[in-house]
Amino acid sequence: MSALDGLIVLVVEDHDFQRHTVVRMLRSLGAREVLEARDGRHAITLMRDALPMIADVVVCDLDMPNMDGMEFIRHLAETESQASLIISSAKERALLSSVEQMANAYGVKLLGVIEKPVTRARLDGLIAKHKAPTPEALTQSQQLALIAPSFSLDDILRGLEYQFEPFFQPKVHIATGQIVGAEALARWRHPEYGIIAPYAFIAPLEHSGNINALTFAMLEKAAVACRKWRAAGLNCNVSVNLSLASLSDTTLADQISNTVKGAGLALNDMTLEVTETIAMTNVAPALENLTRLRMRGFGLSIDDYGTGFSSMQQLTRIPFTELKIDQSFVRGCATNAMLRPIVESSVEMARRLNLKSVAEGIETQDDWDALKAIGCDVAQGYLVSKPLDESAFVAFCLAHKAAAPTGAR
Ligand code: C2E
Ligand code: MG
Ligand code: MG
Image 1 (spheres, protein in one colour):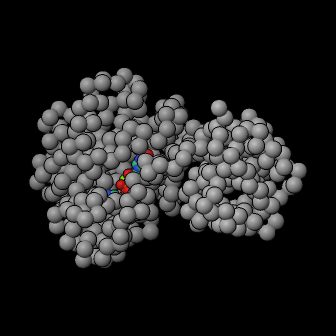
Image 2 (cartoon, protein in one colour):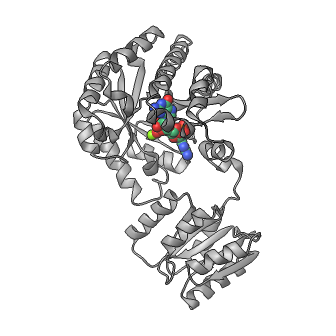
Image 3 (tube, protein in one colour):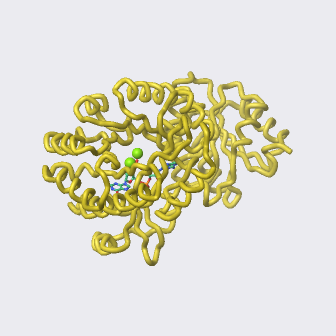
């Protein structure tokens, strides 16, 4: 049975001969239906008009008149089509790699890139990666975005009184497979809408000057949870995200230290994660706070490394203990020739600066294997586990410990 059995494929290619060749290949491989378009504009019209006959897979050239491949990808994302995409092109690898990034950034499911000429084997191999969309294929945030309404600041502040809690996502030491910590990620357990992820409440809290209410609730709950894990014999550290908006108040370090101490956790069992866009904020008080927090024993992590400004400068100014490589570089690093060197050099830089390297967003075994080969210290991602509520996290740790992993996940 071919990977193409029963699929509807759309081929977008301006060159008649090449388009006919690909269409023939797809038909002979068993596609249910093959649609053809001469450029992006024609393809978008077809996709709209062909409803409900929606393409499962689109094979698209880059260099076309009227609407080129890049613009088509943007429109494809806007149609909210669930089609997977294959790019075919004769352009050089570096260019294809940035188109790949762009497609990912637009949220288009990219199966891969074929350097022309297209072959049957390559087409079949890439289409085999196509999965019909299932609710599980969506990220937690995307699933929630489908159902969650937007909330007013008043709703959020009322919710903050009793309904917010940290979920915990395991961080695993890659070489030994042991769980070494967890990142606390804020969740709103809404009585009507269920679990709401941070996209719905962080920005309104930050913009209205109310983010500290969340920060301190998270610090306290995460500290209490971590104290209990340690008392139960789980050798875990906990990480909490700090908003840059909080760092301009120079009393912050004292307030954080008191909250965590008050919850009974040793300060060096907690790591505080800050994003590297700190360069854009009020630098002097932020430096004062972060240096004081480090002096007191907190670990300091530079989050989403590689996405902000002046990353290198931040590394020299702030006494970080951990470098978290952003998921946009980690996801696909095993196969994407442009991502891997970025991950390699981030890990190498962390090593030289004596920082722990953490890769976030690991979803596949291939990426795990690549990071292990590169020598990254710690992994966090859906491959190990999604963020879990506290009791599910403890159960996960106990089951993981009982399985006594040695060197593997
Ligand atoms: P972050 O600190 O970079 O956290 C990692 C995000 O990536 C989390 O999203 C996590 O669920 C998600 N993630 C982890 N592994 C994977 C994976 O393999 N695949 C995919 N697709 N996603 C993965 P989440 O929980 O939605 O949080 C988003 C952001 O919200 C966080 O990014 C952080 O910046 C912010 N945030 C969360 N909790 C807090 C908080 O208590 N305070 C503040 N200030 N910000 C928070
Ligand atoms: Mg984080
Ligand atoms: Mg991050």
